[in-house]
Structures are given as structure tokens and as C-alpha cells.
Image (cartoon, rainbow, N blue to C red; front, top):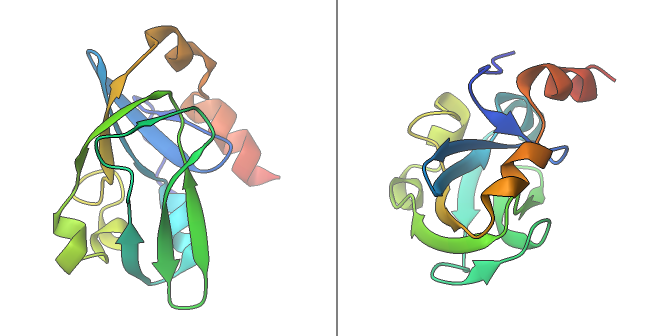
Length: 126
């Protein structure tokens, strides 16, 4: 299981990469493997401010649909348009080409409340 140490995580299996006041967000390798083959990524909150733990979109896999939960309060400033034609990038490269959104962070202090790689490993080991 790939859990990069430089990223932050949520109990809902989103990962967060912070670059200044922008966060890049996607779902973890664990989450994509649990979902199976991803066929559609839906984010209808572009240009909206979404609060922590609110739903910002959903991922549709062959057998299920799963909500995506916002790890940090902020304005969604970009959606990875590659996922419209290639949603399988979430399966093949969840931490790279399979990123989902970019968010302008409202409160950088919220980053400290996210899980580090070791804490996330403990959650998925249960």
C-alpha cells in the first residue's frame, strides 16, 4: 500500500498536498483499491467555498458510488479535467495524475488537524 510520507490524510481516505495556500486533494491508494475500477469522478462544486467534512463531489466505481469529503475549508479553484476522459487515472496514479481538485485554503491552521502518514496507516490497519 502506497502512503507517501509528505502528504496529509483524512479518516475518509482523502490525501492533501499543501503548496503555500493551495491544497491539492485526491483519494488514497487504499481508497481506490477498495472502490475498484473507477468509471466517473463528479465534482460540481467548482468555484464554491466548501466547509471541512462537507461533500465536494463523488467517485463512481463499477459497483458503488462514494462521496468525497472536504479535508479543509476553502474555495475549489480547479478540477482535474483529465479525469473527465480518464477517470481510471485515480486507480493507476492516485497521488499524481489522478488528483481531483485544487483548493484555496481558508485557514492554514486546519492543516495541523489532518493525519500524517503513520496515523493514516493505523486507521487502515484496523
